[in-house]
Length: 287
Picture 1 (cartoon, rainbow, N blue to C red):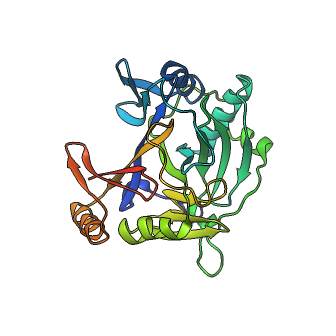
Picture 2 (cartoon, rainbow, N blue to C red):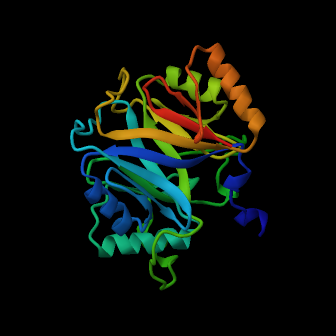
């Protein structure tokens, strides 16, 4: 692979997204959507919980409770879960599938670092489906990562499928990033930058993009709909948790020490170490 076509290796990043957990009111309807639209497969199911993923890798956990209050887009929580396709051709095949199935799409953007399609699940949880561009596209002459929002050349993207068709979520597809709604970007910086030690890879007015290992962002936080939002109500549908995979046990120990110094409660359990951001989203750290 030449320098011009080199892509970011997410497995080499000190921190990356493993999975997300959503609380939903209509478990079967939301699960069916992610299976039919995104091609995720059920890995584990019970009466109140369905885990979806690809191969043996869990990507999305759905926890059902009909008594939950409906999603409120003004609250802190989820802006979108971003599913990263392994290649531009995979994104093109998925887009052709979505168009043929008449899936309502909310937008299509060229972000310089990536090409992205936007939609939402039946309960209003935002979704991005995207493919990264080669690393050579990412940076300005001064070395800074460039993230913009320009119209996407959809016709050119669709050509990348080369006549092949969508056959389900790719085995090596992942959640590339989770974009959050927060109440204050300064408070978000103090948690995601200062405690977790993500870098601020880029900023927009009202938004910070947090990257690890040189990625454009594994997490982002914006106040566009949620300025001054407080702690998210526990009985509301929407984002519940994000699992972050750490490369090194030493990083986990250092995060725990910084969280303790900042007065942030830490819970150790078999599934990892959990702490909560200022708006009550659980961040589950796993090595």
